[in-house]
Amino acid sequence: MWLNDCEQRLAPRTVHTYRWVCGLQEMEPIRRSILRDVRPPAVASIVSDVAENRGRRTGLAAHRTLSAMFGVAERWDYIAHSPCRRLKAPAVPKREPNVPTPTTFNEALAAASEELATLLRFAVTAGCRRGEVAGLRWGDIDWDRAIVTIRRSIDSTPGQLAPKATKTNSSRAIPLDPETLSALRSHRERQRGGSNLNAWVWSRDHDGVAPIRPDRITSLWASLREDVPDLRGVRFQDLRHATATWLIAEGVDARTVADRLGHSDVRLTLNTYTTPPLASDRSAADTIAAVLGRSATPASRRRTKPRAPS
Image (cartoon, rainbow, N blue to C red; front, side, top):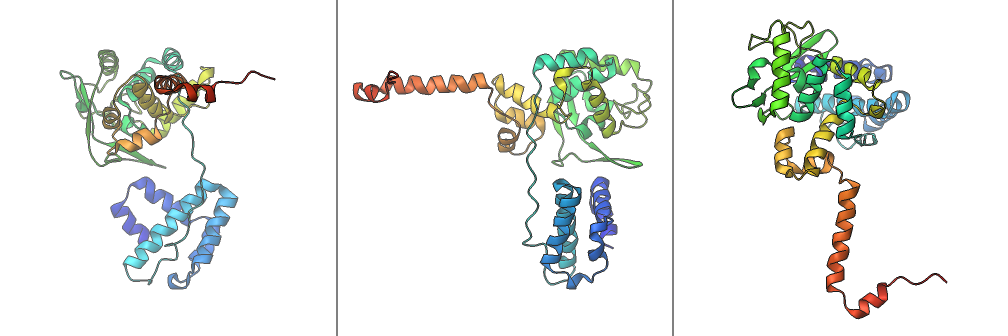
């Protein structure tokens, strides 16, 4: 009943994850139990077993699935309190972004096919997520104004592709540079369905009828990395990190970068996608030293003057 309700409210990929987690061997004690009899220690033990047997990220998925399930059971008055309410999620190490240099990315464009190079250039210049790249239709591009509107994403599960709203449930208009527009025009001329505004820009069959699978984009990127040694370890999602990092390093304000990436809160952009380049950080150190130098007194200079080695 709960999963059937989820199908009416949630993205197919989320429902697929819930179904997969519920089918894990470690979940057998839950499947054999009456909901009101399940206690927090039992749930904690199951989540711990999943994390130990299948990795912390799968353990986190189990925690989220059980929290969602028991949360609904509580709202529907099947149970008085969710046993997951105070249960801590497994700690999952944060994946640090691996941002390529612009030079390395240009090497990737040179090594890629014309179609893949266009896709990658668009992904980086627009700062799009993988599903948003797959969800682009030709009608989303305003050629006269040089603007693309990101309206949807593609959600993929085994055997199914489904358009859905963007992660923030809102569209965003992104200006494009002339070179990216030119590459898109060339790609449109090559595509058999390019004259149809509803056709998908990147299609499984090059006719625009069906969108490319997001995981296909990932596999194309993984294959390309083999031809560019400096890209080893760079994931497709790291290209969004690159967009933000390069723009902020060039002096573009964080609010503009956040709008381009589709972040409603600029703090997410600053906290997640940017790391000050070492040269900028060195410049900051020199600036602080200069400020101190201008205001230093003779006594403070004597106290901080390096001593000669003995």
